[in-house]
Length: 77
Image 1: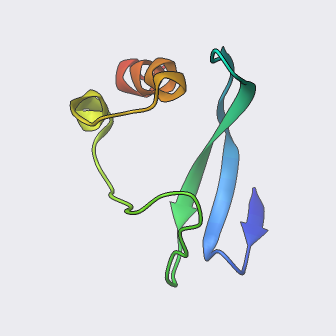
Image 2 (image 1 turned 60 degrees about the vertical axis):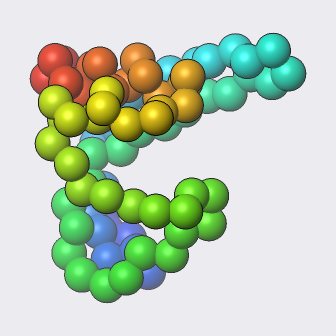
């Protein structure tokens, strides 16, 4: 585990690493499994944060690159 004291979380492991190709850019998306410890989140790229069950993820308007990770989390693999 890696402790991130400024974030108030413990990073347990990479949940997923996915590459996605949009028309104008290619990205590598890293998803982490973390345990929230304390503190406030400071959002820099998004407007909101929500804690939801994995089976609820696909009910949200996700970016195209996020959908395979949502499926992976939902299936538990």
